Length: 460
Length: 119
Image (cartoon, rainbow over all chains, first blue to last red; front, top):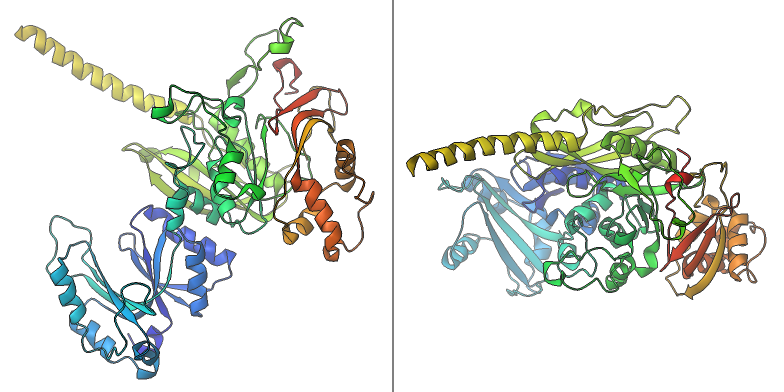
């Protein structure tokens, strides 16, 4: 690698978590904040990606929003050979390094050994291998003026750790990602959570996918406990939601926390969460309503729709309606009548969701939603499609051996017309699919148990 | 922006009337960008009628002022009626059928009974 080009390159150090979401998140942030970036190296496994941008300001922009990024590091040297790696460092132009080697600049060197481990002594040894760098400033471990990062990457085989690392990196830490937000918004300390509240990291990723920025109007039609609204509000979105479940929205459902099961929820609701994080001024409203029915005026336009619709596994997929022939309710029952609910098919729900997004998003705005898939049967061409929406991103979160869910990001590219098509190719609902899987597994298990019992009986 | 057009026999269902039993006024951060961006998305007459129904229309001009983007005073008033006034208890009323949708703890309940659904 020649030196002059090395100077505009940066290492993006990702957390080793939600791997399939990293690329899409960075791409979304880049498009939101107008960052021009060129990928030099990215791989499915290695958490250290190399990127070229126009200025340092641009990488700072990326870390200002990303929750999958740990650090952005200015690349000083990168090689798979130890000698070559040190040679690159030694031959850096003085004009480039001088500001950081000045006697008035305090510094520290951090060491990361990815895929192996190190003792304190080995760490010191590693730091000392850079003794040829003319660092004149004082060492300062807390808040130094400049932090250098040395990385040895040993790969992922934790059983057969190679003697020599696959790759060496050295650079200057420029900025830190927003990983702290994951802790700040942790479900453990959140006032109001439900059984299917979204992990804060994923809700922040969704807000990034949806290009939420200060003042964006964000809507979740299946709001539940409002966990997606928290992620959106964190990035300045003005949030609103709707849900069919009256008890959930009013925080009157059965407590989710095991230790609190014996007492009813008290003052738990979406607004209380918003207040807890200081987002009360970004809360617009929540409505109890059925998504299957039209609710909003035609002129109602949104900047983003983020949602996690019920799949019918942990939460029922329901809409208003009755299977009864006679729908009339007698006057005697009317004052206390609770509307009946019937099953709402996943295919119909997705169809409605895409049509809703095409109608109510402003041009260019995004719909970010999850769909459940059976991993072996997944086929990208089977994903729901709409003439006015373009699929921008598709990332997988693996949940079990058979099942996973995919985060789909659609962008609005046209206004719906009469003949607009929505295609949801789902003959069998996810619930049916999933239960078929469960049923098959259960049968196998029962057969096995049965054999086991027979065996036991015969031995007795 | 809510409508009642999901009801049988209702064609427009807009604008919904509003009746309040308990109103809370909270202060919230003024976001000038948001307010000026949201105004073109609103039906100003409806907003005025809603504010009037709650008794907060005295400061508010009856028609949308020109060049409102640069009129900070006006934007602040819109911000106030739009984001700071919250109906805790009350009803939203369908303009065609008079069906009431109750608001409890600030959350409107738009659920219909089976026999009222259009579809």
